[in-house]
Image (tube, rainbow, N blue to C red; front, side, top):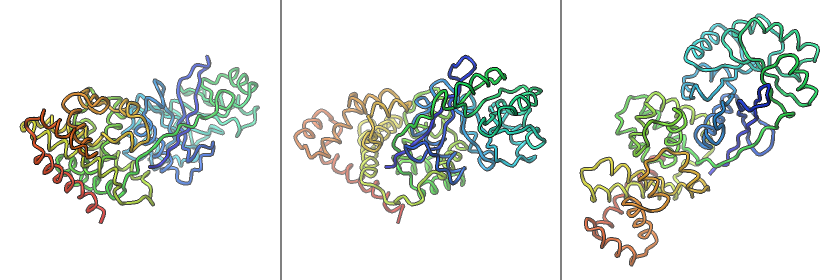
Length: 411
């Protein structure tokens, strides 16, 4: 389990109304970014905001400014991000060449908004981008106050918004307001807020296996099977399906449905992005808790098959219920808070939260069996005419053998 951090600083308009947040990489609870790899830092911001912490929690109805360097700009991974929720902030250190300009034009035509960061002067280097960007950010610390009017006048020919960055005093705020800046960001208005959460470690080996299947155009069933061996990836998939597309039109009841909703190309982009953030030194051994979650999922599926042999959707819902049933322990967070980020079917959600309904009943049976409560197990089996104790034990052994395959993946 890894603790994750994300900085969030408000961006205000001339009425001091909140219009956006800049999302900032943070490696700990301090205000220092500690960036050594800009691609990895930006990837971490995207993963943390859109999957781990929940985009609604981070942004609400506002947009998020996300720093993008040349490598990430040219990458397909950007297409994961919902156009209505992000502003792609081009780093001021970026080399601006014809390829970068073409890429910005392409993103703009697709509906993405762009911001150009750290402008110190309007010169031939940045002029090709000015017709394409929506926002230009001017760093007040880099410029003398008497230089600002010239910068603003030079930018007037283009239909863009001017953002004053690092406004640290009331005098600076008043001056920038008079000069005609449209947006404001800085310590005078609000310091970056550090938001933290927990991330389940993602195995680089598992991600590489999944990426290989996707790029080899493997059958959907094979991709689904790989997900089944990774409860952490299943949770991550549910989060991103709900965040990237601003919520799917239908609630998710199975892994396959989640994969279909996201789409194979989007799934490939997401796995690539996760590879940027997966810990290089993290253990490649499967934790007992992960193995237990996988066992629960498979056993729930096997029992559901015995219950309703021809109802595949029910089997899938049962698997989903079992594999997600340890989320609160895995993430060290209240289950209700976690499930609020997932667009699960009510049947699955009620089973997880209240142990209600048929799936809740089956999950309770598994928990009693794991707790060696033979009296409770016997009593519950009496009400389940399709399942005997011997059949339950046989299914449990099959599920354990299936989950033990997790270890074989890594050896």
